[in-house]
Length: 312
Ligand SMILES: O=C(O)COc1ccc(-c2c[nH]c(CNC(=O)Nc3ncc(Sc4ccccn4)s3)n2)cc1
Image 1 (cartoon, rainbow, N blue to C red):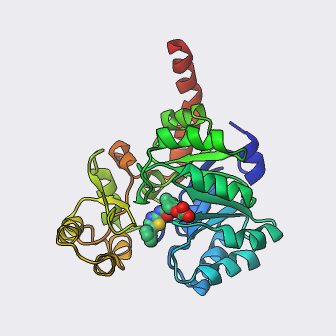
Image 2: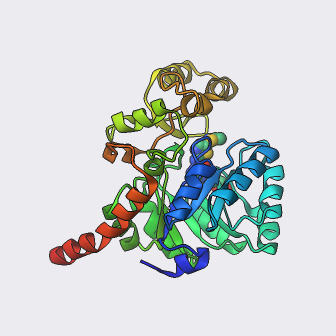
């Protein structure tokens, strides 16, 4: 499974862990890096000092490369970009926006830049400004989503750029990894799967909500306000839909959503919190150690390939 993405990122398996705000702490990122993948700390809306502390914790827990995901809508985006540059973080992924303005400074210190995109247009725009790889994320994923599925988006992005493409959204086991490679991706990014692990520091209620999910348990709210977000349907999404129906303003809707992800992930309020989870939750039935999930995926790939060659 060792390919050019593994060489680029100095990892054993081309399996990245999504840098989910509040969920992807240093403990989870270090566990994924120690298991041979690329662990990624989710900076979310963290201020600079909190991120610096999280990076320091990760450096104590692993001597393997790890990344930091920067959510470009964070009010602290400029300060946290400065922190990842000072700390010489190996890889920066970015979400919910266009990282173009930060790319020269990151490249200057040798940090690999891997933006998440939900469209071919953004992939093409970013390839021109010198990114190292691209995460093409389908709308199956949890949290902030685009409008295109992984199956449709990945091959189009692969055909549009010449940098390695990493598939994300709806991938839960060796079959999904082989499917992503068949679509032309060089690797995968898993979010929900790594949230359902013993090393993940999210609240037990949040993890229990993942287990309880079926494939239709999530909805995309906020499509009207311009920030479509996939979450588990609960009392918050019903209140949100009510407000949207009554023509509430974007500010009112964002006020309803503010702080709700922390409420779900840290405080375990899965009724009124924003339980950002991907559709792949329907495949997850237990909370397992990171390394067990990683080995399960890697060891089943030859079997999936053998079954495939029987069918074609
Ligand atoms: O076209 C452009 O210029 C930029 O447009 C984009 C539009 C969408 C994306 C995108 C889709 N998915 C991702 C990566 N995944 C994510 O970013 N997932 C997230 N989950 C919760 C988040 S918190 C938040 C804060 C503000 C609004 C919505 N959500 S961010 N990025 C990236 C760029």
